[in-house]
Image (tube, rainbow over all chains, first blue to last red; front, side, top):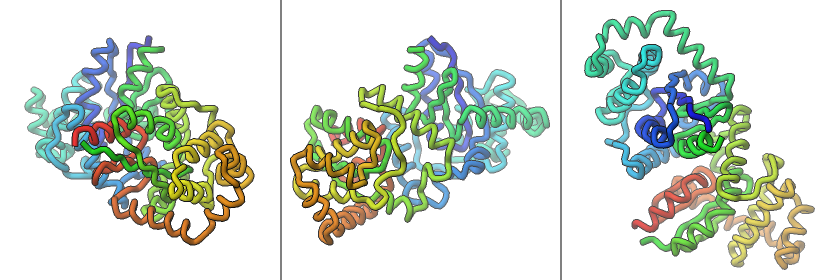
Length: 197
Length: 197
């Protein structure tokens, strides 16, 4: 059995709201440790000309209805369609990278998604990020400075490179060994794969 | 409870292989009748600039691996990656439209998918369509002539118009009342929705 599941996430992906609120419990129940890995899905999507919603209003409208229904199905909070797109300079994702380096990534990413989906605020804006960080017991000014520092930018780019090399193209992605599962709706498949291998 | 589920299908969609082999049993078990409705998903996808795999080799490779794993998970036969894309002049889909008008659509679409996925032949080619039709007890020449006739072309276009109006953008799509569920992986959601409404 595979006991570790890499959880590649990008704050800005809509379906990742579901995964962020579901993955820990399901993995924990199966005895599998999740490794949260922020990466720039946006970079890979632009590179690969893979823009599922840009200029596609019919699919975009469906996506929000589907996210709403899936949230209801899984008992995940949803408070209406939030701002979109968000985190255009990927600050929240770089803060998540700081958090991954320091061991508080799950708490931060969950809080960033709560700010986005429940308070309907862009978690990439400093004025929205600061109270999230404070509530988690961090000094916003210090964390934001780290998120801008070269070593964190490099770590974020390196995780994006790793994702590219693994054939990852979106968020959330679950990686079990070398097996890639894309989408919140493949979480159960990924956990079953780990359990069976 | 909603007792009818519209099943919008396009022969040429890869994940529809899974739905074609799963939907009847799941719907039947829930006491729901499926109404098979061939339409030109390709027309809508081109209109909406929604081409999930064209020029996207990373996502394309993932899709085939995912279809293979999902087939295994659900006990659906899979014999390796078949030819793709197929049915470029949508003849198989127009035959499905004849079949829908005459009451043998499920048998034909399942047989077309078996030819495509298991024999790895383009079901849109006349030389592959003819034996499929013969095995189902039809005279290929007659059915193929009907598939080219104006009334069938109009019916196929009308079903595509209906899909467009409903906000449908891909295959398979399940429609429960006015609620749209896209993808084989939303089959269970669609059936649960029917049961609950």
